[in-house]
Length: 233
Ligand SMILES: Cc1cc2nc3c(=O)[nH]c(=O)nc-3n(C[C@H](O)[C@H](O)[C@H](O)COP(=O)(O)O)c2cc1C
Image (tube, rainbow, N blue to C red; front, side):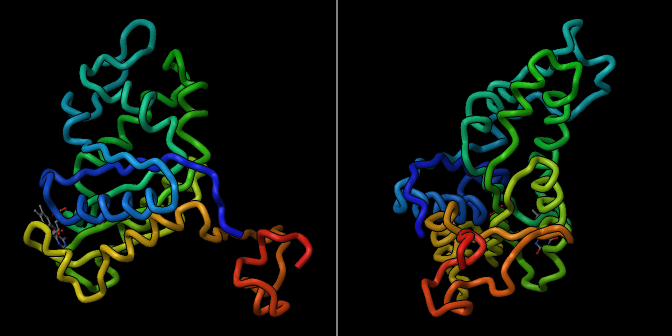
């Protein structure tokens, strides 16, 4: 059954190249999300996080516990990340990790979810319980090259109670070259955007109650949807 609710998707773009490959993947994902009737928005972290890296919080926090780094990050978390139903991280692969500004995004988020921040309960509620996905551009196709970033985003998602529903890795080096990748990652990103809220998400543990087939058609020749969403299959 398709999810027809209108939702908000925020692409958090981190490449210092504003016309680069990972951003092209982000824009393609937004096209798909909009085709599916959702609202889409892209933010460039390089415009937001101008105040630098995380510092020693004991020296850096103001007396009331708020962050003293002067840039738009607090407002960005509150006004754009918190209202979104899905956060999509777009990053180039840099030395087998994310772009530095995306790591800084996670590092500095700590200041707003820790107990000393005056609005930490509201902020924590706003930052949790979404869907998430990763759009990665890299020169190398070797699957292991992307594993560090995938593992980090999967753990970040688990920590934030996000359902990590997809990864698209586009190959290219020159600006926009990802469009020439024969596996067509732009189409894959568009498709992920379209299905962002429909995709069957599974993250089982030993206590999970579930049927032994994933797709209803395998279980009962019924519909081609994940059976986990129906109690009676
Ligand atoms: C500092 C730096 C480090 C990079 N490290 C890697 C790497 O470890 N593996 C890889 O496949 N490509 C690496 N690349 C290539 C980029 O991932 C590739 O050009 C990507 O498409 C850039 O995406 P963008 O256009 O969104 O910036 C690196 C590029 C730069 C500038």
